[in-house]
Length: 289
Image (cartoon, rainbow, N blue to C red; front, side):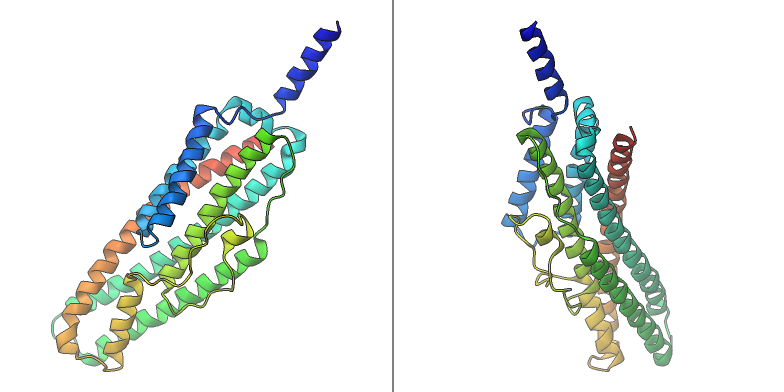
């Protein structure tokens, strides 16, 4: 009877723990995290399109992990509810930054297309062109202010999850927290990239508040920045620092490159957004189970 009672107690204890971290799906998540760290360390200049693609792989794997019955049972335990709440808060933060990036790209693209249309017209007056360029640059200032506001809001909302529990539970939540911290880091860097190098840092990196052992990417972008190049070229036209007749074609070429860049980022963000929504729905279902 005593042996039977001990067996039941052990089974009950195991039911509250997460499945072994050697589970193939969980192992795959760990491998994705390792590859992401390695890619970031090896190539700081990798394109944001590539970074967004790797984030999609990460969150796709997270969604697979959250579908594991034993994981759902473990997360649904009352003593794990606070951790699920923190994961939900983190998922909302990532979604907010993702939306901020999408809105910034949309606004930039709309003004860019209007400017491209003007530049393609032959015989368009210098005053009209200057007005359209100034309109684009004014729109960019609005975008930069919105990005700064989004990042400052995140500064106040960002939290460090405190995890206390058995080894397997803490390991799993640490992995999920690292996914969120990595996502916040990439989204923060992307917003700085969209706004251009003149945007000042809010004084810290989001990821540093979440995962202290991760390498923090610099907010100052030293690699090619299509947004900043177009801004600089247009400012040169308006302020007559460059010859309009000689540089209109150069500006048109830069706008075409920026258009492709925006399309690539929009596609990556839209796909990532779908993964993020799926993750959030899974967490809400677990919490309300």
